[in-house]
Length: 280
Image (tube, rainbow, N blue to C red; front, side):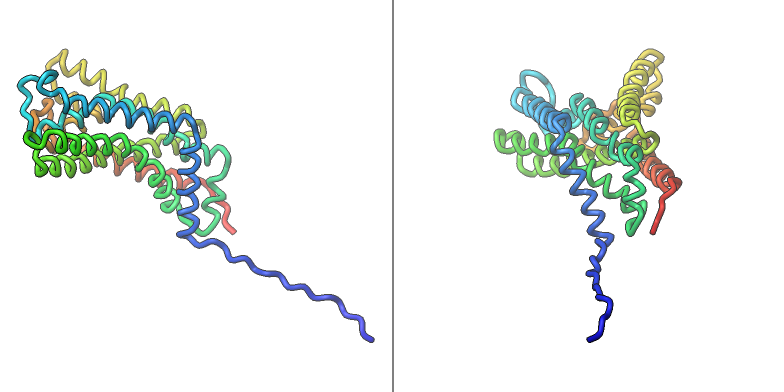
């Protein structure tokens, strides 16, 4: 009879791959937002208000907007709905401000990047969380408005016009959504306190729009409107739908929006790269 030490075998559990981890970040983030009462309220009220007011313009256009041509240029009005600016800013502030700031505060950022995903993977995952939610304000109401116009007034708004309006609505809506997504993530990456990032989001949109509009009107210099992202968006949207402009050229306004979007994304990436991450 021999006595020998027992042997044990350990089952190795494979680590999740890069793609699975990225999708896990996205799924977790979306579940979290759709469980937060504040996010649900903002999304529901934002979509409802922007959609209802845009449809009201269609239904009562002849009474509310006498002389307004009922063609493709009409859809510049729903695209420039003031509720879009307010609720996009509110959604980006409530949802976007904490996407990175919360991870920096809880040190979850270092766990995410320990392995095997990259900084770019992380940022793209956060963008995929925020951009579709913001697009529910910038794109969905405009598409619904064009469909309602074609269904209720087929003799006025033909399906050809409606389809053009839908395509242009998606284009200009995505432009505004990507801009606000990039800026929101940039502000969120600068601080561990999401309240500061939220305040910066509102300040960037309204703090530039109101003074720029007042000063441009007071001194008669429309070039000041370029300072406001919302005015830049209005210039692009008006040109896209063939409506009268707001006093600034759309190519310059488009260049500003795209430039700020790319610059904010690049700076956010460099900011994340500078955060020390322990790998193993």
